[in-house]
Length: 111
Figure 1 (cartoon, rainbow, N blue to C red):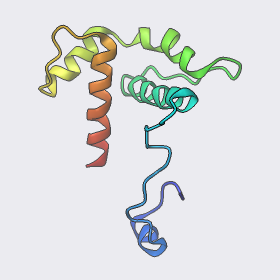
Figure 2 (cartoon, rainbow, N blue to C red; figure 1 turned 90 degrees about the vertical axis):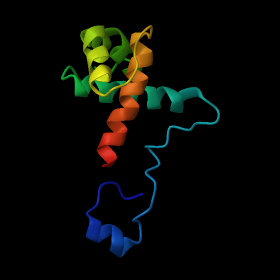
Figure 3 (spheres, helix red, strand yellow; figure 1 turned 30 degrees about the vertical axis):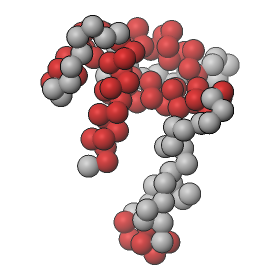
């Protein structure tokens, strides 16, 4: 995998349809890879709401995001984001709404 390349480079390298191994969230065994995928998802959400900060080097990334950054993202903000996208969000927790919003953001990036 060569990372971000131009359309011309992708054609020359014959990697037009290559899948970024970091973007695949499927980890058969769970464990550390699933923590990384969740941390990446939550990082994307905190960036979306403008409250992302890099975790200190000594602290666990996922724990830092969940305890320090996610509380800065308000429930009503996430709910409004889903409502504006026409998604049902009644009787959902904040994390359930974040999962749906993340999928939408990823889809919007692909367009």
